Image (cartoon, rainbow, N blue to C red):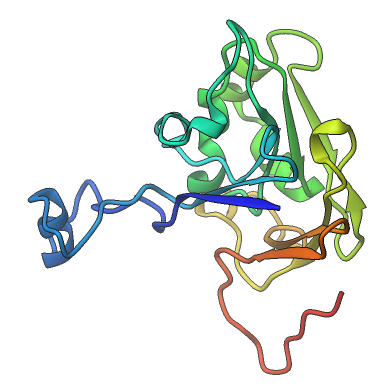
Length: 212
């Protein structure tokens, strides 16, 4: 399993656009002590050729350009085989709208996260220009699922419910559910490799265990 960290900053990135704290100011001045970072996102591959993104940040274009493994290899091509959304926060899903250039996408998400992004979202129409421009694949909590197709190369994923809260833009319109925020555990049965990715966990509760 190959892993590439595309971004590791919290929502808003670093430096933040409206912040001039010591750290942000130092980053803008090019200090060697701090390094600018884009909002968190990961690329994972089972073969080094096809890649899955974990979250799709607003800086997705810059993140793609920063890593040659995600560069297209033909006039109309992308090595991105799928995109996982761990919740509906804008810093995790807004980048989908930047991948609208008439290219088919496969998005893995829980039903709650999918509904939060698609329902009553007029901007989502830009991802519905032709049939199956976006194929949604459901993540079921606690069940290991194989990622189908040659691109997956045997990778399996398990979605784990995580303590958290609804995104601000959904708080007044939705009832919270266990599917609103998840962590991901990816396994490569060929090598025994395992990646556990938990982002935006509000609190680690006493006795909270991950058993797979």
